Image (cartoon, rainbow over the protein chains, first blue to last red):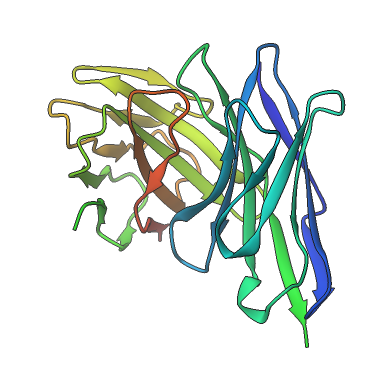
Length: 113
Length: 113
């Protein structure tokens, strides 16, 4: 069965500092990996995804993530945090085995002025 | 504009009552999903449907029912058998490809009084 673990339910960074949100997955088949962002009382919006090919994936709003198969990780980064980045971030995994998409428990990102 | 519409946005119900949440999409997507979101729990999959007139249980299907009579519609019924129904419910859809990302509605917040 597939699973996702997000380390840290809350992460705080200063404005302008590096953002690093961690995601590790478990999958017995090649995974498809996603990062979503959620603002309060709204649905989720895709930031980026990895399916095949280049392991460094660039997304919207300056975010990127690197698929590391040996570490079963897909950490999300952004070089310089902005106040508007404050939100909850979810990592998700699926595969070509079925249509289930499994989410992690989320990480709430706080930006300190 | 293309997208997913969930209604109602807020819903209150008394214990013992069934309630149906609406989800409509005009994206021509084959697959549709229902997730439940609780604080600190991430998104948990209730039901999903890959094609009209077919659907599969997710990880927390007990106390819920769905139908998929039309491609664009995937209503969720929260029955009286669901012991703790107060939550934020999210509907999503995607293309038939397993590499496709989910598109989410704005969510429905159900409160049981």
